Image 1 (cartoon, helix red, strand yellow):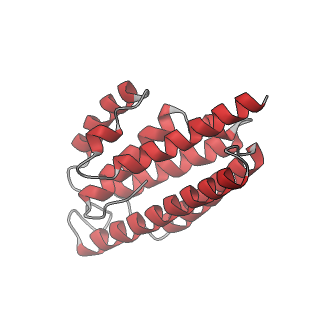
Image 2 (cartoon, rainbow, N blue to C red):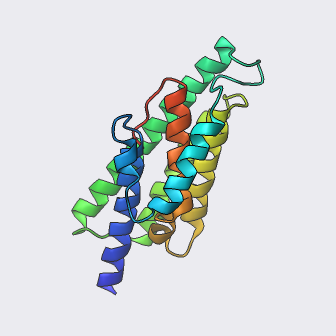
Image 3 (cartoon, rainbow, N blue to C red):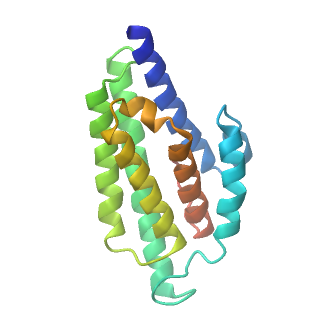
Amino acid sequence: MKRTRVTSAVLLATAVLTLAACSDDDKTEAGSATPAAPASATAAPSASAIVTDPTATKDGPGSKAGAAADKELCTATDKAGQSMKKALVTLMSANSGTISAGDAKAILEDFTKQVTTALQSAGDSKVSAAAKAVADEAAKAATAADPVTAAAEPSFEKAGTDVAAACRAAGVPVSF
């Protein structure tokens, strides 16, 4: 049982670190060279292709209000991601590299709450769609029987890659 928990914790840590690697402009390609690279490799080009006008919002394409809202959303999402990583590292350090399902659930729920709160003041844009997708994936992982394993799914990684790409296109690098 301990081996399974350690493996799950390592998978979650790998997923979080992979998301962090996706935000570096110079290291985006290296960050996606993980075991889940086939899913990331096909998702990354499509995310880049989709993000053609990162400031397009309900206020109109390229509006300054939309661009400011996107930047605020990216900053809030980055802050939520940093908080999630810090909590994960703190708990794993305190528990010899393991993390309980309850702790993982709490971390993912907090991340979801922070991003969802930030989305309330965001308009309709590529950034808000990507942020909503990553919040939805985190919420889905939090409700799973094993949140650690669920957070290591390729769909969660793809959502993180997409929000990093959308925010980077909006001029805000995120370290997911």
